[in-house]
Structure formats: C-alpha cells, structure tokens
Length: 424
Image (cartoon, rainbow, N blue to C red; front, side):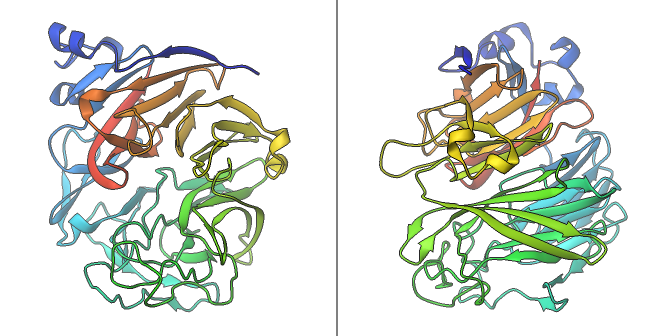
C-alpha cells in the first residue's frame, strides 16, 4: 500500500485567520467551539482544531467529562472538562506529580516520583499506596544518593493506561525513566481492583549503565537498580498496550545497544485474573536502529499499529507500521503505512483517526503533528510553529466533547503546556 500525503505544511493553516475573524471567541468555531476554546491560544488546520488549555490548574489527565489538575501545592478535579474545579485538596508535592489516570469508576491514581496515591472520593482523601511485588511483599523505592533525584518510578509516555479486560478495568503501565529525576528501576505496574492495590507485573534486570549516582539520568557508577535475577535490561519503557482480541498486553522498551545486551525489547504478557499471575515473554530483542525502537502501540480490530523512533547509523528503519500481532517479530510481514522521516514514538488511534507527533529534538518541526483521518489511507503533517520547540506526548483519549489531551514538552521531556486537539 502506498499512502497518499494530503498536505505537508511549514505551519498550521488558519491560525492568523482565526485571530483576525475572532476564532478565539467562544462559539466562533461553530460545532467545534466550546467556552474553553475562547480562553486560550487556539487555531485550526485542514484536519483538526487545536487549543492550549485555559488558565488554571495544569490539566494532567482527563476522562469523559472529568479532568485532574495540579498547581504547585494543590490538586483539583473538574466535572465539566476543566471549566470549573469544584473539588480540590492541598497537596504540597503537587509540583512533583509525574503520572495520573482517572479510572472508569471515577477513582484517581496519581504519583509523584516515588509515591503512588489513590483518591476514591473526589479528592476528599488521598491514600498513599505501597506497591507489591510478584510475591506480595512491599516494593519500596530505593534510598537515593541525591534526595532531589529519587527516580521516576511511575512516569509514563503514554496517556492511555487502562483497558477493560476480562470484564474489569485493568490499569497497566510502565515507567519512562533514567532521563530526568534520577536513576530508577524499570517496571511494568498494574492494578486489577480500580487502584486499591498496585503490583509489579514485570521487573527488568539491573542495567549497569543507569546506576543511581545522584545525577538526573544515572550513570555507570553508584547503586544498581532492578531485578538481579532477570538478564533482560532496558533503559525505560516506551509503551504498554492491550489487544482485546487476544486478551494480551504488549510492551516495548528502549533504548541502546550495550555491551551487556540490547535495551530494545517487545514483550507479550497475559494475565490470569483468577490466580492474579502474569506470564511474560520477550518476543523481539533488536538494535536501536530498527522499527522495534518504537512507541505508540495501538490495537484496532486485532491488528497492531506502532510508530518508530529508530536512530543510530543510517539508513534508519523508521515509520508507522501495521501487522498481525503474531507477525510482530517478522519485519517482512509488516505494512509501512507512512514514513514521517524523523524519530517519532507517540501515537493514539480512536474513531478511525490516527494522531502522532514529532520530537522537537530530532526533527525540523517545531511542534509537529501527524494525522490520518481514515486509518492510514491518507496522511497530513503540520508544524504548529507558534508554540515553539515542543514535543507532543502523553496522548489521552478524547473527552466527552471530542478533544484529545496532549502534553507539550519543552525540548523532549520537561513539562511545559497542555494542548487539546479535536479532529474534524
């Protein structure tokens, strides 16, 4: 299949025109308009509307009509997509929050670098959670050499972290770590009871290249972290996704080729709810310059979709791929749907729309988006230069008004702004 590129622009279309005709006023976007759109920088392309979040708490996650926000020393819950924030609580470490997920029943699981919390009552209370390992023992964070860099134990790149499996919602995610915040062990976590308990689904081995030496990303000296009995090492986890057709979870990791072993793996896991046990298998271990250094895994009608950020010596094996899950280990059986030419590893698919993004540090795009409105038949790329050098990631599924939520990260990984994108 040869995809047709509809448009490739140096910046968004309609932004200056939007300013000129009052697009930023409430109601000016017609069917796409809502009150929030009038309170922040907004515009449109041929394929989607976009806007920054309005002034107020940083919207860390959303689900349906709910939004979870944070400020320096407080957390907030909105029930009208961020227009008002009737529920709030003092939380001195709010500025250190690295993860949050609103579950279907309204429970909120969130975390600072090394501590998980659960609220079941709209933030009236927030209970600290202690993770359990596979044997049911307390899994406690290590004592950091530098308290300012305790490790990103729970920070993910993906915004979708829960799915209905076996009739119940499963929260499953992996930590993107060893880049900021200090060295951390690499784990896949899960909760099968709406966040009441969180356990280790899979623990990677001790990577000697990311010891805790007190620095933001770790190094070759200091405390070893991870499972000493697992020879599989990784720097961090790029993505965890669920395929309901197989009732199986998939994860991919990064980043490099090390003398101790390659860090890019794809794993397939199945969960036995009756026994509360996982079975994981590494199905691919590959070089950093292959399509398996990737992220944004999605499953649609049983097929796997992902996008690659392969780097290293040319030629680069990059692009957005699709295949049957059983064919993931066999590149000759993959279909290349689109090649954005640069490193990309964030993507979401919903309602027939594929939305992905560029890295600002690896692409000439300032704030680059990739979109297909028809599951890969046609494609467009946009550079929203008015936002500066930003990397979109942590794509959350649409809220009740049809807007995807996206982090805009400064450079690559430092939180900056929150954007909302609504396909046309």
